[in-house]
Amino acid sequence: MSHSYHSLDAPPPADAESIPPIRGKSTDGAAIINLLNTIVGAGILAMPFAIKQNGIVLGVATISFSALAAGMGLYLQGLCSLFVRDGHASFFQLSQKTYPSLSVIFDLAIAIKCFGVGVSYLIILGDLMPQIANSFGITHSVAATRSFWILISFFIVGPLSFLKHLDSLKYTSVIALVAVGYLVVIVIYQFFFFDSSEHKGNVNIVQPQSLAAVLKALPVFIFAFTCHQNMFSSLNEIPVKKEANFRKIVTFSIGPAAIVYIMVGLAGYLTFGDKVGGNIIAMYPYSIKIVIGQIAIAILVLLSYPLQCHPCRASIRNIINWIKTRNSIENINEYAELEEEVEQGEVHSHDHDSEIIHDHHSHHLLITSVIVALSLITALKVHSLEVMLAFVGSTGSTSISFILPGLFTYKLLTLQRDQFINPSFHENFYGVKTLDSQFSIRDQILRAAAIFLFFWGLLVLVVCLGINIITFG
Image 1 (cartoon, rainbow, N blue to C red):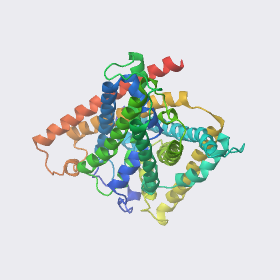
Image 2: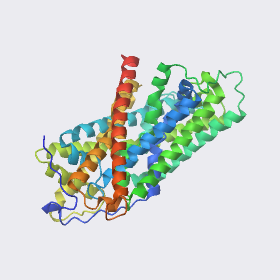
Image 3: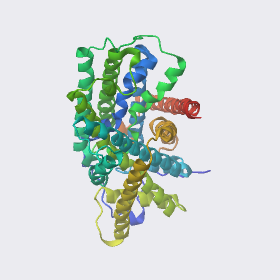
Image 4: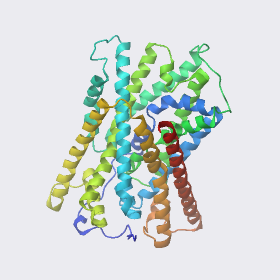
């Protein structure tokens, strides 16, 4: 199969020449907030249990390594974003430049993964809210049903899901992160002041419970840092795309998440020892501060749903574009880029762009409506997505976090070395116009890191699939 690669400085398609360049309207801070909120979800409650499976030393080491691997994936996504037109970075666009025939498969995996995670948030909410209502003395039969609360939640997540830009969700992300902060405070407070002597088991500092226990907890750590589905959208919305910005975004999104996971994991595990369960908040006796903690969890999962809907919609739109223009790679790229221009609000309804604008807005409303409606139906009908999420997570999350960033980076840097496909890459990435030996070595290191990340992703995929088959087979 032969691929054609074009310099990024080549002229755009004829009917796209009049389209103005995209100007990033967001900030690094907004990108960090949204990525951090995407990372830190309800999985934080399982960290003490995962550390129990590993022991303290191995547990903390695994969290740290998982953070580094996820951070490397995000960093390489930043690098890859410089090989497509400014403001148009996506897994779809990059696959069109590297492995065009696989692009629709990548987007299908991302769409299914994000849809499943979003629905799981609604299921958690439906299970949690009746307990909270009962804690406040609300005993009406309707308030005790999960269906009622799932329906109520859609009056909040529905409108938020129709927002076009991740930047628009930064304020709801701040609220969600405040909820995370409260959970962290509660777990640490309970460690110092809760008398758990009657409920506490043994604490293992070095010795893990068993090899099987370690492997079973591995997906909890690895997938705890998955936010890569929103990285390209975040990068598209910021004005400055330099290596320093990528490092800043990665450091201040992955770093605080790792610290929070370690703090909650250690505090929860040291409070209950090997008797700790999969939900640390459920381990504490009833009190008003614990009820508020449950409310914080509800807020967290509720406001995390739109952050899954956004990349799900983008992937579905890419699949639709692929179906419409599958006879020509150039048409696929052109159509997708024009839709991105409209998404950013830089194209107006006149002349030749009116049809694409109409299509885009129609697609946005229709796709979002379908995602939200199917999420509602699935959450109401299904009480657990554990099996589906286990398999989709081990394939979809592994692909977007490790395999694809590694694969794309190695391919693009090799093409850059051999064919010089982007003359401005080193100036944009490193801030230098000429490539000397120092930056040539850095390119080699990045290619090596990309290979490592790719094979790490394959290893994780095989191990996690094996665990799932044993667990659910």
